[in-house]
Length: 134
Ligand code: THU
Image (cartoon, protein in one colour):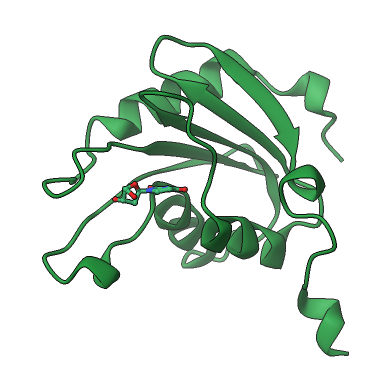
């Protein structure tokens, strides 16, 4: 198990900042970038991708997570999320994180490089997860 202190947070933050450059946000103009570190050391990046049918929009975090899961990477170590104003991940993304990690460290940062690290249990207390169905 990778300790939070072993993670190169500034590097993960930088990868999220770079991913944010690809954000497709012609409706909200609110660009988001994410960088997801998996257990084998791979980083999957993501950006938000909006749609004229607004509900078809996908967030940056889920883009990164689905990229990882779609190639069989299910062991998550950490995720960094970057916006202009350090906005926190939405509830849907928190729930998707919860599916694959019980207590993921989540960096929430801005493009100037300022950040805070939360645990997923802080962001989503009393959560519903896969084991809730058993
Ligand atoms: N957005 C994300 O990418 N992640 C979040 O956790 C919150 C919201 C995106 C979706 C939409 O493209 C824009 O930010 C405004 O809601």
